[in-house]
Length: 375
Image 1 (spheres, rainbow, N blue to C red):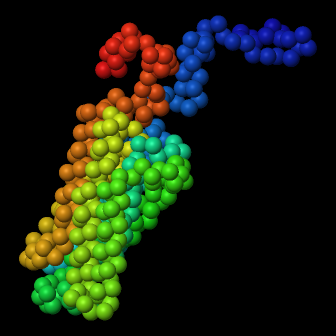
Image 2 (cartoon, rainbow, N blue to C red):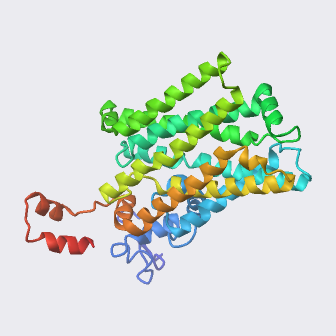
Image 3 (cartoon, rainbow, N blue to C red):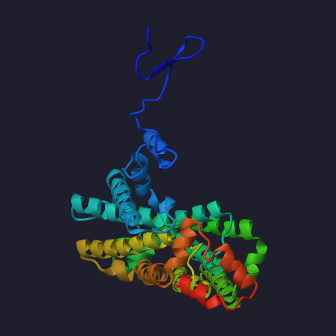
């Protein structure tokens, strides 16, 4: 019996299939290396579940912060924050349950955005096995500032003594301006900022701290001295009560926030690059700052009591300062140094090996051409 079309018989009489001359499914595999991969894994141009999931997780997976990643990443932040606000208990002192739920959703969304904002930098440091591009002054001040902010929130939220002092000063009907999500955020932020500082010591060694500005070191020492002396004054009842003390801590946090971003702005300007400085922590910080201010104003309006703003200056100024510096960082990343940011995100060097060799050998004749190419 003759073999059918597309089949052949080998020397042992065993049938084996041969390629159909009219079947060109694999004809272009050599010329199109993506052909085989497309048949096995699917067309990469089509949206897949893995790609969609990656877009929603872009706050911790994306290095560059392109518009599509920003869109899906922020949607995921709002969705998860709203879920937390709906599922977790909310404050019952608001006029209506519906507004209490809205306030809770806003609070947990900014809590989630600010909390997640610490992870992109930590993960970036871990992937790169270095903290180059991250200012050690910023990280040190961040730990100190969130230590003060944590004590401020925990004490004002949990201490009956401090709450009684607050109501005595602002009225018996005054509501404590700190909610549970504020406490959770402060504790979490302190832990993550501490991890970032430990990464600097682990990857770059103790010598990294020797590069700190003496002015920043003096500021850190001064704030620590104020915290210690203030605690002793409250303990012995000398001119200061515990409510005033936590207000001093909140002012320390404000001072740190106003200063801590400056070394990073200067470092980016000096390097003419934002590589090593995660843009996603800025985008999430900007989102959290806006929602924090929005929640504070809406809560005070719903209660008809704006002492929550004057009595919670730390939260208000913290959000405003973060927004201002976040705009500066976005300007550096997207407008001033976009080429260096894109090259760092894609893993490409800013200079090719030939161009690097030219600079190292001091070939001044080729330098203008190389610079024009980079520009």
